[in-house]
Length: 372
Image (cartoon, rainbow, N blue to C red; front, side, top):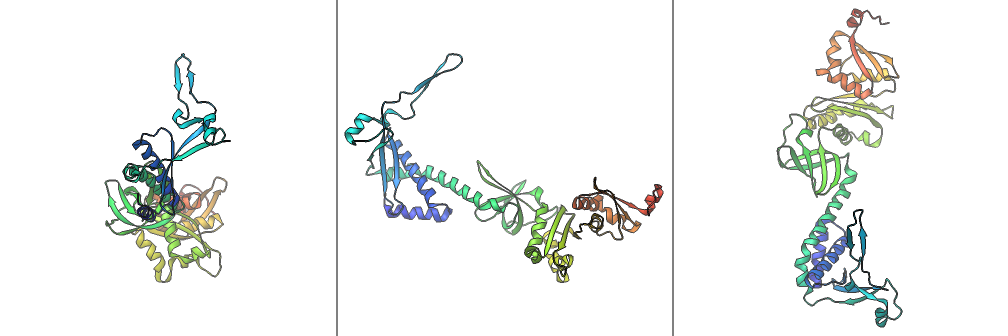
């Protein structure tokens, strides 16, 4: 095997696959040792040493020094059946201590006697035989490299390209690998085009026997959170804090924010000049409504804000331990407070972690309740 050609091929693999040089060298040494044993019917212990600087390959045969040959053992099960367990090292790979000391005086049990046995045509024979094993090791190393690269990206947002689709999923090109975007994790009714770029939330990264599994979503509430962090610089520098995001994808999201700087209006900062910031977010969400909610440590105030767009809401905390509250609205704001199919009050409950009952003053009076 030409050493320069070998090193050139080695460097190409390392650069193309973006994996460790040591991993590639180890895979090739293992593959060449396997090839030698197969092609030259070797029963002895064999290892292959590759000089990563010069490309020189050596096949080393070695014998393990023993004080007596291991004949193996026998095991007897409960029914009296005998199972023969072969020796851990075959006799052809061992040498008795007394014979070994004739070759190397002073050698001890457990040490080895080595001899280079590199065949002249080994490069030609071994290359074709080792290719499959090398490729397998490289694929394993590449999968591990991808998992390592993406493991800290779980819960983050990335931009990829829609590469292909089947009946259930879209496949998004993320650079070194593809992520799976189930169609059920798309924003309802949105239309996408193959080959176009798409923002996705990485919901899960897992190593499987078939390779890295990277699950994506545009439906996850975390997708809205990351959109806000991308568009609102104050969320990054900490002058505005994002308390909580709840979402019913395609219908409505509620985003609770507050300011750590009394000079900064958190709602205004999220909206941006002439609605530029929130406009970019709404465009990405395919028309989904977003309610910006001012967080308050006062539960009644927070619930009142969370029921936006309803106005003139009066909130009574019924049971702070059980987290139960009553929201009183006028007739004009009842439908806004409840929302389509109850979506607004459900999201407000999730946002505040309170069970919220919405009633009008006339409903309460009709039930015989008195509100001060």
